[in-house]
Structure formats: structure tokens, C-alpha cells
Image (cartoon, rainbow, N blue to C red; front, side):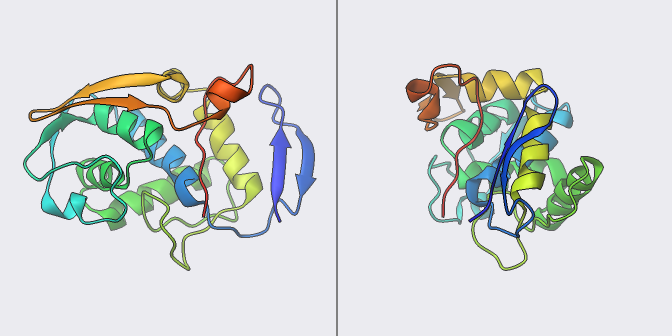
Length: 191
């Protein structure tokens, strides 16, 4: 129903189909969550997982209350495995709480020129007030792919994340990395 294809060097739209229609971003929300986390310059901090971080379905990563893990490894969990539990832990650690983190996300989106976007959570689970457009998502992705840390994380085929209680081998769910030659990163999402 809505799409845009952008030249990654110039930002020029090569194809558009109703690019300003409000849509649920689903897990592509996590692109902006990751950028806010990366730009916090706190990736080496250790995050202690709280019960509230784990009370989301599906959790995907399986974080446990009391577990200690670096913010960097949480961003890997977020982008490679699409961990909703990782998203909540990141939001709490970086923003103080979900609402403050959502405000940080929306401020960053506005700074990038997004005019049809409003985020209310860090993971993209459905909410009537959580939406973006293909054009805005394109702006966010173009910006994200200019960030070396983001490119490194989303381009990784696998990553070993070690916490205080568990070692996780994370394989990237982005099938385009394996199926489409020339793919260098990104984040899939669906509803």
C-alpha cells in the first residue's frame, strides 16, 4: 500500500507509492531505537534487566530479571533478533522510562525531517498512536546507515552476546543479507 525506494547516496526517491500514508512501522521502529541508544554514547555501560523489561510478548531474546548485559549487546539483540525485551531494557536504561524514551525518539525523528511519524514505544508492537510513513522511515534508515556502529551491527551475520548468566549466539534474521547480493544491513519488520 505504501513504499519508497531511495538512492542511499543522494536521498533521491527512485520509486514512490503513497509514501506519506500513515502505517504501522512494526519492528522497523527498532532502527530509531538503536540510533538513539548508539548516539547516547553509553554502549559500554552494563544494564541490569528488570522484570518490567521482560513482560512483553513475544520477548524473542529471553532476557531474565537480574541478568547484566552491556547496552551494546542489547542493541545487537534488538537489531539481529528483533528482541522486544531488549527494546524495553534499552528504553528504560537510556531514557529513564518508556515515555521519556519515546519522546527522545520523536525528537530525533523531527530532527531528521520526519513529519508523519509518532512513536509511543521502542519495539513497534501495534498502538493506534504509533505510526510512520515510508518517506519518514526512509529518512530514518538513510541516516542510520551513515552511522558506522549501526552498519556494523545490522551487517553482522552473527554475534556472540555474553551476559552475567548466559552466552547467546545471535544470528541475523535479515534474510536479505543472505539472499540479495550487495545488501549491507538494515532491519526487517512485519505486521
